[in-house]
Each structure stands twice: as structure tokens, then as C-alpha cells.
Length: 538
Image (cartoon, rainbow, N blue to C red; front, side):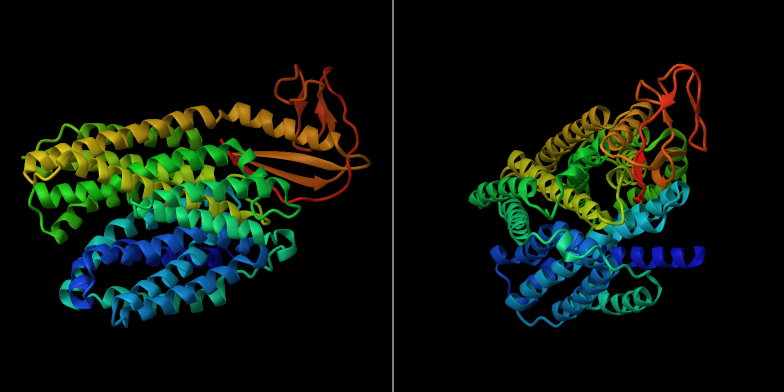
């Protein structure tokens, strides 16, 4: 059983790596693609934009459909669409065919990516195993984002641009076959549990137009329409009998706070990656492959920390504290980059800051993922995963657009090293502001373990007070860094008048559910039933 679960994790991470690599590997090949397929400068951006619009726009809907129809089914279907679209991209003979195939590739990527994290969280219910699995997932994301620049350069130089797409075909086939055989089947909760066609149209169109407004900066009208559609979607979800996105998902301050903090810090990180690469090429004179290798220490440090140290720290200190520590390190690195000179030495001036950024990323990514997936159950793990991935994609697109625009605006027409460095300084300073905003969100929204424990107990008491007859026993198993709440069907235990087991004087709650102490009194009976447990990180 343990071996099969780790094989499943390898399959999910391999598919994720392929999709993340594809997001960065194309960037290196754009000049060659432009010359070979005769793209105009204005239309070349659509090689990236068509993929981002489909990918970012469909993550939320795909995650919810995974809950309704089965996450394994959604993952394998997305993998098949992505692999076939990659083949079509490699065979493209003109701009129109490549752009259309990239859009379909984005659809497949969204279908597979939206449920991957939810499958990992449900696959590993034990806190220690879950932290290690999330660390491995974070490692794959960090390595994929940086390795794409290197692999893309090698493939274009040794073969041709077609192979940056063809390489996905054997990987996708192997991952699909292995996933079909090894991933556990799940039937989903059925379309009737969340069949909101109007809501699906509103949210998909709204997010797609929002991403379009980000990547096509002149399309300001699209941003206004997107905001109106998303506002209508929120109203629809509040009133629909079977909402596509139940708003209760955002009632958890861990989930909402983690998603908002991620929106800010991923925006800063995406801008950091692109601006540092431009700085090494245009100011320090690195070749593209050398610039990719120059950024690799960030991925290496993130990988080392997320695979080893972060899980132990989250278990000992709690995810929220680890997240704040990582955010502080990232923000400090961005702030210090604003002091780097135009005639910098890579080893002494830039490399130490890249290592600090990598340390922060290695702590931040597993911690924010743990918090963002808090409370995911069998009924909504795909939805929570889709929300988390959507905030990541939107944050990255917004941050990249903001930082590159500010850098270009300050640099102006001058292309001297000093002018370029001045523009990059402004971009890094803005990234530091985004990092500070993420820290503020984490400090304010993510509560201490004591407050989370009291909230869990309060919610349990409210549930008990709404029901009658014989009932539930609330087990609060506090593992390292995570609280797991589960119900089992027995007679309701005694309850303290204060409403909190911790705060009641001389009131002890035992593992069997009984209580002792003068402040304790029997609680009202509640109905017999069983519900799935939820996890709340501290």
C-alpha cells in the first residue's frame, strides 16, 4: 500500500513537471519559432498568451469537475489532451496551427494540474507523510520552472524548436499508462452536486478575459468585463442551489489567507525570475544558456529545503510560522537586489542573494501549499486545488506584467547597463512591496494554533447544537503542525459550558471523549452519522 502510494506520487509529480517545463521551455525558443514560422512581432506573443489564457481560465472549472466526475478521470483526460496537443504543436506548419494547438495544450494542462494537488492531499492523510509529499511537489515546481530555461536552450541548439513539444509525447504516454494502472479510482460526487452551467460560463469567461487583459495590456476593456463577470459569478454562487464553487471554501482563514498571500508572493517571484535572467543577459553579458545556469542555484536551494528541512520545520513550528519566515527571506532578498550595481560580480554580488531567495522559496512553497489545501475533503479536494492553482497563475501573470512594465518604463529608450539596472531596481523594489503585503496577509489572516483549536471546537459545538438524537464524537488529533478533525458515530461526550475544552477551568478531555472536572456538564445528544474528516494546519 505504501509503495503504491509513492508510485502514485511519482506519476503525479512527473506529469506536473512536464506541464511546468512546458510553461518555461517555450520562452527560449520564441526567436527561432518566429523566424521559422514567419510570425510577426505582434503575433508572436500569442504563442505564450493562448496557452496562459486557456490554462488560467479553466483551472477552477476543471478542479470542480474533477470532484464531480472523478479526479483520476479528469487527470488522465487532461494528460491525454496535453500530450496530443504537444504533438500537434511540434507538427505545426504555420502560426495559426501553433497558436490553436497551444490553446488546446493549455486546456489539457489545466485539466491535469487542477486536480493533482487535491489527489496528493487525499492520498496522504497522515500529517507527516502529507508534509513530505507536499515538499516533493514543491521541489518539482521549483526545478521545473528553472530547468525549462536550460533544457529549452539545449533542445533548440542541438535539435530544433519542434523537439521542445515532441519531448512531451513519450513522457505523457508513460505517465498516462502508469496512472491508469496505479492511481486509485474515484467516482466523484456526481454532476448534480455542483451542476451550475451558468456559474461555469461566468467564472471561465471572467478568468479568461482577466488573463487576456493582463497579457494584452492594451485590452483594458477586458479587465472591466472580467471584473463584472466575476462579480456576477460570486452573486450566482451565493444564491444557486448547487453552486459550482461553494463560498464556504473561503470561510477558512487558512485557505483564504494562504491563497491571498500566494497571489502576492508568486507575483513577486515570477517577476524576480524573469528580471534576474534579463539582468544577467543584458547587463552582465551572459549568454541565454549561461543565464539559465546562473539562476539554477535558486532551484537547487529550493529543492534541498523543500525536500528535507521544510517538512520537519512545519511539523515542529507549524505551517504559518514557516510561511512567514520564508516570506521574510524572499522579501529581504528582493530588497537587497535593489542595491546591486551594474558592474556586479556574479559570485560575490548576485549568488548570495539568489541563495537567500532560494531558502525563502524552499520554506514558503510547502508551507503555503499546506495551508492552501487545509480542510480539503473527498467532496471538494479538486475544487480547493483548482482555487489554489488559479491564484498561483493569476498572481504570477499579474506580477510579471507589473514588474516588467515598471522596469521598461524607467529604462525608456536607453539601453545602457546603468539605465537597465535602474529599471530592474524599480522592479525588485516593487517585488519587495508585494512580499511585504504577503507577510502582512500571513500575519493577520493565519491564526495561531490556539485560536485555530478554539475555532474548531466552536464549530463542532455549533454543529451539535443544530442537531438532535444520538450522535457524533469529535476527535481532535493534533499532529505536528496540523490539526485533523474527524467524526465517529457514538454517544455525544460531555461538554464544558465555556464552549472550549481548553479554556474551561479544571476540565480535562480524554482521548475516549469523556470529560472530568467540576466545570463539565453533559452536552445535548446529536444524530448518528459519519462525515469525512478535515485538516486544518496550524
